[in-house]
Length: 171
Image 1 (cartoon, one colour):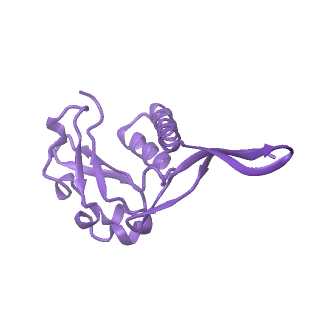
Image 2 (cartoon, one colour; image 1 turned 135 degrees about the vertical axis):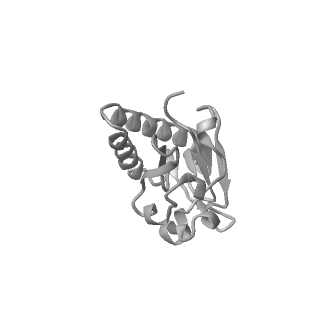
């Protein structure tokens, strides 16, 4: 009897780190003269489609939560709360906001497991100045566990190799 599975999770170890891989496959008997002589299996990797859809859904969820807020602190709290529900896509989030009085880009919210590890100012993570950038520019911080001491202990196997610094907001 033929069967199939859609978007089945088959984790793969790559360089000692687990990676999420999704596959859709079907298989069924090959029959000749009433006898089964083999199995036909068709497999298609669907990882990119599944991850893309899941991440678009996350962006929509965060947007919906943030649009209902009335202050920066409320928006940060809503974004952090929604992102915390999706650790497979965002092991952690840290939101730094420019202080209108000091001009410093200060930590306003983060995933609770890493917040105590994060510097109070973005300058503690990178010299890159996002206020001088457009929303289309980003910076990647490589080897993030070396930049944020204790991050690998806090996140365990889910600790990313790099982090994205992305300016958001007006402008």
